[in-house]
Every structure is written in structure tokens, then in C-alpha cells.
Image (tube, rainbow, N blue to C red; front, side, top):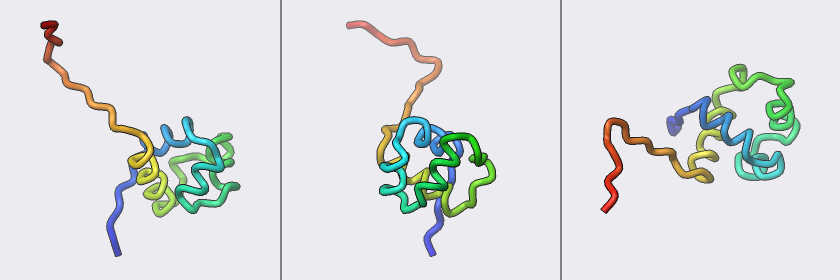
Amino acid sequence: MEKGIADITKVKRGLKHSSIKDLAKGTGIPKTTISSLKSGARQVEKLNLVAAIKLTEYADQVYKPIIEIWGQEEENN
């Protein structure tokens, strides 16, 4: 069995920016579950681990990571 990582920040970003249909198709999670999560009827924090991992992996595939470099000033050449 492969090990996965669940990242609540990525899960919430995916839920916020993707449609129910796209999430269901991309993750295999039922539309009713995704709808409950998007509407707030079900808390993301209480999502089972398998679904959280699927949503994290979906977000990794669909959204580019946000990279921030601290302590460096941008040079204009």
C-alpha cells in the first residue's frame, strides 16, 4: 500500500477553486461528499484520511505550488 500525505491547506484550496464535478471526476470521491464539504455542512477537518489524501493529490496535479523566498530582495537589471 502506498503512503500518501494529506495537506489541509491544499484540500481547502482545491475545494474553493474547483467545481464539484471536476473534483468528483478527478478524485473518485462522491459528488454528495464534495458538495457537503464545499457548502460547509461537513468540516474538512473531519474528512477521512483516504479522501483527504485524494484531494491533496488532486490539488498537487491541478495547481502549481506557491513558492515564496524570504529574505531576498528582487533585483532589477
